[in-house]
Amino acid sequence: MLCFSSAGVGICFIAMLVGSSWLYLVAKKRKLIRLKEKFFKQNGGLFLEQQLSRQEASTKTTKIFVEELKKATNNFDVSRIIGQGGFGVYKGFLLNNRIVAIKKSKTIDQGQIEQFINEVVVLTQINHRNVVELLGCCLETQVPLLVYEFVTNGTLFKHIHHKSNTSPLPWEIRLRIAIQTADALSYLHSEASTPIIHRDVKSTNILLDDNYNAKVSDFGASRLVPLDQTQVATMVQGTLGYLDPEYLLTSQLTEKSDVYSFGVVLVELLTGELVLSFDRSEEERSIAMYFLSSLKEERLFEVIDDHIVEEGNKEQLKQVAELAKACLEVKGEERPTMKEVAMELSGNKKDRDAPMG
Image 1: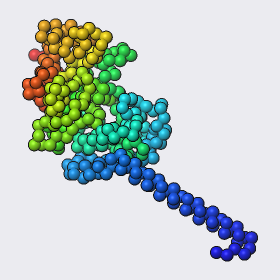
Image 2 (image 1 turned 180 degrees about the vertical axis):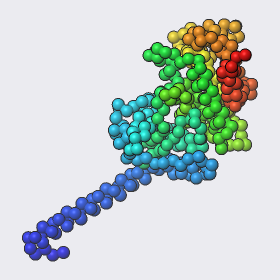
Image 3 (image 1 turned 90 degrees about the vertical axis):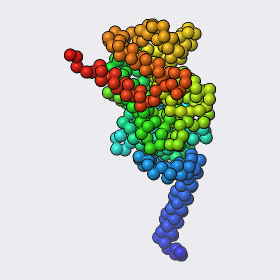
Image 4 (image 1 turned 120 degrees about the vertical axis):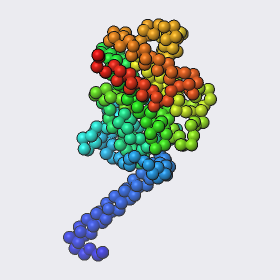
């Protein structure tokens, strides 16, 4: 292109400037695409696609969120953090004004990536009102992100144990939380398209909404169990105090491992005490063991939370205590199934709600 006049020189300069800017933007866009592809592969995206393609019975499609998540959390500002641990959990506001919880890995760690992918695979199999809903994931960033429905009222642990709660949960609400959690676990074991063992049932993984309805969460350690198997050989994983002693001894994970952990949660609901505390005497250090010895020695109401004893539901408390005892049997085969536990708890509630006379 020849430019003979000053005007022509100006036009040429502008054309060159526009052209170089366009080339720069194209190169930048291609670089960003390559970076996203790198992160997607690094964060297990190809493996996830492979796993999901095998699941014809998947109940939902996983959406991919990218830049929207940065906007939703004000670029993951610390003021938006609502949960800590191995992951950061942020409160976010999507463009449609929906409030979400976003789990973000803290480090580029293969173990955490595997947990993220496992959680997506497991949650795509689940459709239950008492299980937290996975809305989507993003694997095209440096660390993977999972997006869930936001459950407004925090964890069951917070409502049982935090000293700031001046109004302890009444027994009616505690029983309802137990029933809903048992229903969710029974669904995982018996009704999901592929049976699922949660493997980390505890009060911090039970979320509550404004009406104190339970939502079971955190499926990073969960396992899908092939229909022709009843147990899975796996490296022991779980939380001290809730961990099934038989699983700890044999490394054989079964549905009854969740039953044991749920039994510990029942004891928490009954006693209002921490599962493990080194501030207590050696005899009382494990509340589950102390609960069992108290039940055996007919001292049950010495360990049950005074607030719920005062409500006058002693017969029902005894029945739930006996159910907790059954869940805590050392041998898994002697424990009830989660379906039986859910039915027993629901029956107790119906008995209480039945009209007199």
